[in-house]
Image (tube, rainbow, N blue to C red):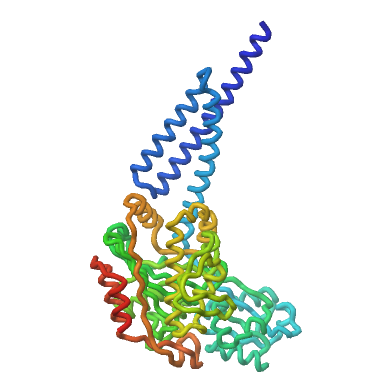
Length: 497
């Protein structure tokens, strides 16, 4: 009698464990469906199919625990499904969190450095309290003033400084010993390094102060991006780290999308294009790359004025993203038009370069000095990299590289497209499965030297826009937006004339 009771108790315990596993599976299934509905990226037919499958498996898992023969299969099913659902929930929650982070930024960061020459005796800001400072006054002088106030509070005395409108003159006076230290926005590091190649090796930062500023949401209407054509300004900034850091815009591209004709036109604009910055430079001209120092809206307004087209949204990416995305995808294949070696030593053959890693792809996109047509060739290389990434994202590599891509995007990508608009585009693509025709265009210009609004009285290299190429490119954008189907041959032929 005792043995019989023991066997019944063991059997009862086995079934209890199975029922607990089934309940866990049901809870995980409910969470999975809830997150899926919140994300709203799948067409309803797929949502209903997934719901039906999950319901069937949950009913089987729970019901099998009331049988003598199927309860073991039910337990195995529960364990496998719980594992898959945990992975699926993490996958969906990470995706949703990334979509939220890249569409909800409302602040920018200015990093203000206080620096001396590398061999200076001062090791801390306190050591340099009585130094004569030069402070940058153009492009965000209010941020420099905030940093000076914060530094003065830290050391308990006011710093003695003079303002410089010319950042290059600021560094020159530091080199010449006319001032002891400089206070400047690190967004100018790349510009200063171009002018003084050893600048970053010649100085030593005593302190870096972050100034975080709330910014207004960049203007852009709530278009139905699955039906209406739209144009996105793609900005590649020249800094590592946080996407919110104020920086120049080294990659400048207008991407015109027509969801009805399934055509995408990428139009690249050289970073040194000599243009007016609406609302900033007045009648003065500046390099297009410097528009990024004043925010995405300034770049959008500048390009809208240049081409006479509406620029609806922006997408900002930094070089960290490109490198990490390519690595997460396992490398990309780059079809180079030339054989060349970058200034950092990466060698590319003419034709296909297979499995190029992130650092090399970044070098490919940034190189201009060793290309026959300089900046005009660089913008075309940037399009080659973008196409390669898009092609890899549409291949099975997206499955193995998904988590790495989410990691790279979460802190290094930002867009004014809403989370709902991005989800609707994904949903549309999953529903139709249609291919897209990706077209390339670019504008050109001629090299010259002139003063720039953001750089004082220094003569800098600029590119004077070729008005014919600007008008031709604008015409193609308008054709794409109006629903007219065009070919790459038409674009290439027009640009060659």
